[in-house]
Amino acid sequence: MSSVCKIVSRIFLIIAVGLAAAWPSETTAQTSVQLEALKRLKNLDIEANPSLKKVVLSILEASKGKPAFVEIVRDFKLKEYEAELIRFAQAHPKDSTGVEAMRLALTEPGLKLISAAITGDDTKAALTTAQALANAQSPKGEPILLNTAKYDKKPLALRAAAVNGLAKSKTGAAALIKAAQAGELGADLNFTAGNALRSVRWKEISTAAAKLFPAPQGLGQALPPLAKLVAMKGDTANGEKVFFRPQSACATCHQVDGKGIDFGPKLSGIGTKLGKEALYLSILEPSAGISFGYEAWLLNLKNGAEALGVITSSTDAEVTLRVPGGISTTHKTADIESRTQLPTSIMPPGLQATMTPQELVDMITYLASLKQAKP
Image (cartoon, rainbow, N blue to C red; front, side):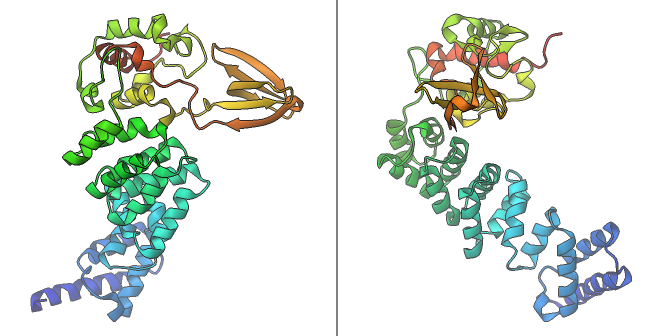
């Protein structure tokens, strides 16, 4: 370091330490100014300067849950903050600072915490952890993602996040191909794996993927890749006709402005909630994103019968199910042997097979146009 740089660093060191003494209680203004000063000191060894270390750790504590926390850990190469970094990544799995936090947490103890979060019972934490790990695109995380993708007892959305993350690297994509060839991936991942792997830039992998995961079929022909479907232009008026025609079966479970059967989520205004890609996925892979409150439940009754539907009411005395067709049935709790939440959607896969690719595009265009319910 040149003599001038040393002098400048010394000045900022005095500022940072001096502010800590001048403002004994933490304030937003103090922390903000100290952070600015610390940016000029990130190459200094805080272990060699106890005064600076005290300031850094004080600001670090005040910055928990904020991007500055990640920056300080990174800039001063601080150790043993994996748990807090993972919590930040879970809260911000899709932004750059959250991904940076996950990368910083990829130490030996951090990997154990990450694995525990993904395999734990908190499904939301598991999913956001997997998403952040997938976006980190680090070879260190690939074994965890691969194990997650292969564990078919975990929710489809979690396994799909792992697959999409692995497909971003050649080693991860190759591992997915190997797992698929060995029969280690659940069939419910076929769409996600195929969509992710058929379009990778590594020819040997994309070729293998095309054989393992053929493109979904429309009416009489294979569908284009998802990205191409999203880019295609559709006819809103024809899409409405496709949605409501009997063979499409959409209106047998969904309502738009009161038209159709009230069983699945109402779709009036769906265009403000989901983009086109998400709308396609909801049809091509309905189990990947089940709407809250529309989970499928199977009741095993003591008389040997079964009842499948969506629970609309549950008390100590009885359980009410809405079954396909919109009919509600009520069962006394005393008559129920067991109840099981199913990992799959009641909405069946393969509905696109009743449409040509253009009809599917038209229908998605129609759904995307539904911005608000009619009065």
